[in-house]
Length: 146
Image (cartoon, rainbow, N blue to C red):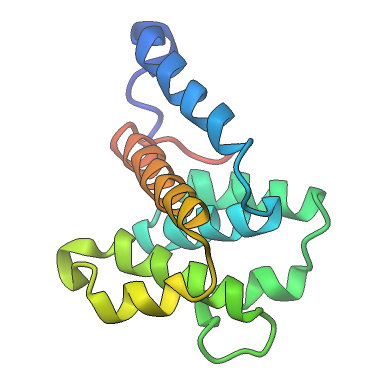
């Protein structure tokens, strides 16, 4: 295991401030907090960001998420534990996180759009983009769970 490569909060506080501003805006979306955490965890799993998986799993548990659902998140396609709306969000999360492989086909967009209004879909897309940015910071700077 590596140690964190640089202290980005110390050397680039102005950029961190912008990212935290985005997080504050995302906290005020119409999306359910539990859904936002599932999206953060699933994207982090796909990206292999141990720091973010750990942080957001802990946050989800503290907020009342069921352990069973968190343990099943990697196999959400095969389990009955997630609502149709959550499944749509997870599908969009996987699609955008793996955009270089899948792009974002109209068929998937239409499936997802059945469960979200336009504002929610925009907010979901921003939430997915943001966690992917955090994952790249965490992985690139070798951040590890404590």
